[in-house]
Each structure stands twice: as structure tokens, then as C-alpha cells.
Length: 396
Image 1 (cartoon, helix red, strand yellow):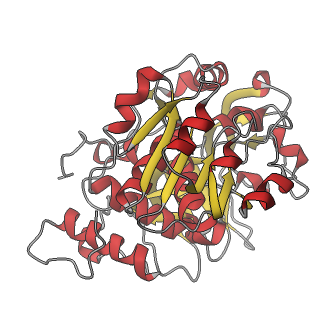
Image 2 (cartoon, one colour):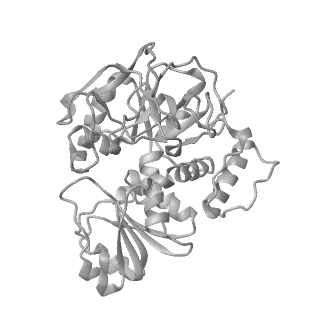
Image 3 (cartoon, rainbow, N blue to C red):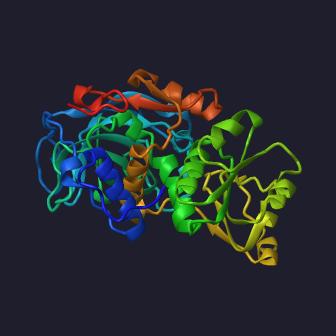
């Protein structure tokens, strides 16, 4: 997919928005055409304004954590409406995606982060989509009624997305064009941003380079395969034989059985790689030896103490570098807008399972055990019919 320098005004607005976003990805600017923005009428939420002594008109519903020692510390309950500091937006959440990092947060994995100091009751949840209810003082790039997709600041000890509303910095959200369903949008941020940041920021991937995605059929991997292929890279990926055709249909040039003890040898036979994105971090496959001189080995943070750091001596021997991955907060909106554009342009999402709020804890447990197929997205409280659309159909 080529980056276009200018959107054709004769195209439908959703396509025009996509072209503008794709241009932004190559120029470093990000701006959504105003005509493409969807604003929904909605009843107001009355937040507690930071610095003022106003009575909260009501509490909000949330999946509340009373401790972070396991999923048994989670319950559905009411919490105080969050304060809205100046410079932030209050979002009425409609859908929240379920990620492995959510159950890891509930089990205390984030305690290793020095600045993670949650106050209980705490609300977890890393991603979601909803409608802007109120904007704080000084906010000019969002307005009430805007449909947005967002990544939360849970790792900073802030509230997550498993709540009726959330206050966040505007740079962690992106406005959605007309017609993009909120359940699909809610599934984009964590896996999509991780893939995009790993390839484009940490891996500094360029067109015509060869990229290897380890665990290409996983949540991050399936995004990474498509993003790399659409950016003009030659994509190699590991997966089970059952998923080989799935990845080839999404842009993989060649796939390799991750259970094959000779996988690294077979990869090298196909040519050296400029970028390796290792979504497993188990250090068991000799992938460093697959890198070309000047290659970049990017790992995905797992919060798992068993994760293996690549051997620096082996990297030096082939002239490659290790680049620890992770989400870059300052580039969140840029990444979200790029993902929106790619989705409009045909990016394939994992199979979505939209669940009711009562299934929150069960969905987290299934994610932990790996027993649920596809991507779980939870429909939150206060159903907004404007926000729930058939995929591919414009909202009226």
C-alpha cells in the first residue's frame, strides 16, 4: 500500500480520512479531516472538576480491584466519578478490549514498575473506545460527542478502561471517523500499537527490508505481519502449520513452523533479516543468527520475569543491535490514527467476541488460560445505539 501525498476529495470521506492518515504516517503530521469526525448527542456526565469543591451527582460503574493479588480481587461495583483535571478529557466508555496485560495487572505484575502506585479501589483496563462526555480547561482538539479510541495510563497508576467513564490525557486518544464501529476500534490499541511501535519506531523498519515476526499469528504478530507488508517489507513469520495460510493471506511471504528445531536454519536459507520482532522472548530459537549486519532485534515487554534478554555477544558477532520494545506514550495518538487508517484501508482484525459486562472476570480468566478464541471485547454500561453499528456500515 503506497502512502498518498493528498487525499482525493471525490472519494468517500472514510477513504479520504484513510489517505490523510497514511500521509501523516510518512510526514510525521497527524490531523483528521473535520468532516470525517463523528459526534454523537449524549446526556452529560457531571464530573468532579479538579480544584473545585463540587458534589458528584452520581457514582459510575466499574470493574473494581480491591487488591492486585489475583482475579479474585475483582468485583463489579460503583466508584466515585473521576475528577477531570485541566487539559484532560472525560470519556464515556462503550467497549473495552481484553489483553493479557489486564490479568497480569490484576495479579500484581505491575508492582515491579517503580512509579506504579495505585490507589484502591483501583480500575484496570488498557484499551477501549467511547464518546467524549466533557473536556477539561484548555482542551481544543476534542469536543463533547466525539467518538474516540484510547489507551489508558494504568502503568502510571491511573484508572483503566474497565469503567463507565475515564479521564485521560488527549494525547492517549484519537478521534474516530464516521462509520467505524466502536467494538472494532476498542480492539486496536494495545496489540496494534505494540506492533506499530515495534516495527516503525524501535525497529526503524524501511520499505524493501526483510522482517521476521516470531509468533506471527498471535495478537501482536497478526498486526505486525499486516503493518510490515503494507509498508513494503518482505515478511517472514513463525506460526503453527494450521495458521500458515492465515498469515499468507495477510501479507506474509513465507511462514515457518515455530515447533521446528531447525527453524532458524531454514530462515537463514531464505535470507538474512533486517528486523526481528520477537513477541515471545523465550530465546530458544537462535533468531539472532538470522539477522543481517545492522539488523535490529526487537522484543515485546511481557512483564514475565522468565523473559530472556538477547545475548549481547551474539548480537555483536553479527553486527546487530538489541532494541527493547514497548509503547511510546508520546507517539500514541500518531499510532492510533495510523491504525484507524489501516483498518479503513482493509486491515484485518482478530475474530471479535463481544461480551456483556457480567462476563468481565470470566473473559480475563479465559485470556489467562488461553481458552477463548479470538479477541474479547466487553460492551460496557449505558448502551449507546449510535455507538453500536454493523461492521462496514456508516452510522446514520
